[in-house]
Image 1 (cartoon, rainbow, N blue to C red):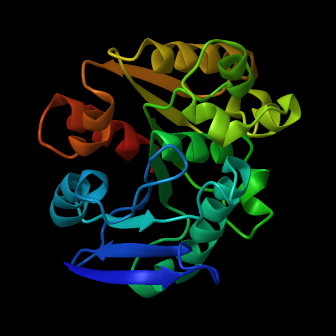
Image 2 (image 1 turned 135 degrees about the vertical axis):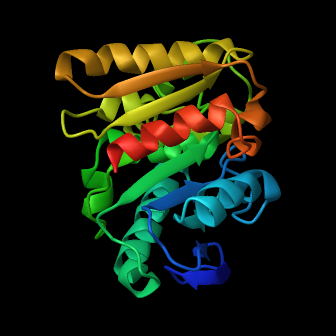
Amino acid sequence: MRVLRDVAYGADARQRFDVYLPAKPTGPVLFMVHGGAWMIGDKAAPGVVKNKVDYWVKDAGYVLVSANYRMLPKTPPLEQARDVARALAKAQKEAASWGADPGRFVLMGHSAGAHLVTLLNASPNLATELGAQPWRATVSVDSAALDVEQLMQAPHPRLYDRAFGKNPADWRAASPYHVLTPQAGPLLLLCSSRRESSCAQAVHLERKGSPMHLRITIWEQDLSHGDMSSTLGVPGEYTRTVALWIKSQV
């Protein structure tokens, strides 16, 4: 395996991604977006990449891209999602040089990163208008911000005020629930049973997508919020079921 560090997709120092390449790529590209309340976090953190690299890159022959993006307070979540789209477009343009297929990408994000990839999946034109090609599927790992308007109108942690502000129009624009279109791709919503809010939001989004005949799957796991990402890639039922779902989409 080799790693390409800090591939630039924009002028800002945060607009960089790392690429983990197997000796001979045989699978799709797993495009990972870290969490951190839209204000902290890093693409190279062990909880973001280590076990995923071990399982999908070293063992399964996938390419893994792990992306940074600009953050709060300067960059609000909707523009962060556009950064993710810019990174995706750049990765797809480079994929052939890695021996990978630009048409076989799967988005994955955890926490705030899960919100960002779910937002792009809900309304793919947010990404395609920035040059990204369609991707095969999206894995959203434990986001509690799928209907941002509903979230902000109920009692909520202060971190959401820092992220989404006070304007209901901004809430709806950054809400996967409100921008959901029939063009949304297959979506796997992983939610922690220890966080009632994330599973409730997942069900809420699935119910809206059902009349559109969208392919939305919810899997509840008895794991902490952090372990929902960090243990993904550790051999076991959790990783195996996610891997099988991804394989079925690519």
